[in-house]
Amino acid sequence: MRTWPDPFQHFEHWYAEAQRCDGLDVPAMALATATPEARPSLRIVYFKGLVAGAFSFYTNYTSRKGRELAANSNAALLFYWQPLERQIRIEGTVQKLSREASQRYFASRALAKQISASISDQSSVIPSYQNLQQRFTQAQTEHTGDSLPCPPHWGGYAMTPGCFEFYISDENRLNERVYYECNGGGGWQIKYLSP
Ligand SMILES: Cc1cc2nc3c(=O)[nH]c(=O)nc-3n(C[C@H](O)[C@H](O)[C@H](O)COP(=O)(O)O)c2cc1C
Image 1 (spheres, protein in one colour):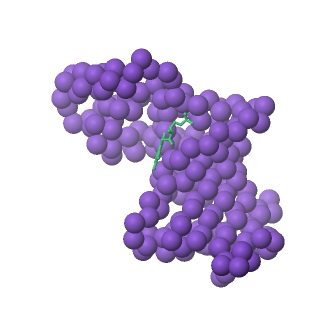
Image 2: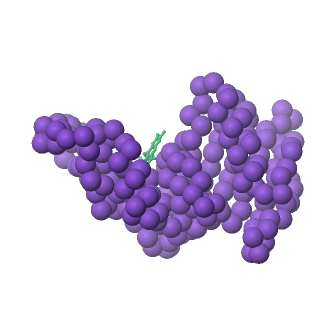
């Protein structure tokens, strides 16, 4: 596997190669969070770009992941691109993006998605899916303008990585694993892991 002195360059090369591959949902990444008692939870979110060296995504701050991140900022990300037989694991700490960045991104979304985000108390128990659809339809009739303001419960996060692992499957299971660890001084140390 080709390596770079900086794992962000490695990530960007692999990401661009995945984008050239048909039928892949390239930005879909698994996000693992955990309670302070180390009870983990995992879900897919969309990667929305690197912001000052951190992996950004958007969600509801009062969702399960939002509550877990408020109590424990440690998290992990995973990209898996099956046709390329590649995965990337990233571990680090997560901070909220600025209110301005969240508002800017929210404003770029279609009105229907803004309405969904505004009416959804993500991860809470609801009476039924039909009830949610009715609230969505009701909100659509009430909001005839172009855009809604970004709700206070919604916004972005960004994960600052402390380590990356780049993995390529091998047909004999002699899988190749390259691990980059932040050395604290802004540099990265490369290690090779046994499959
Ligand atoms: C392909 C895909 C992309 C998703 N992207 C997002 C996203 O960007 N933000 C988000 O909040 N949820 C996204 N979801 C939904 C999450 O997986 C999850 O159901 C939701 O965020 C609630 O998670 P929580 O209860 O653990 O907080 C996505 C789901 C899929 C399958």
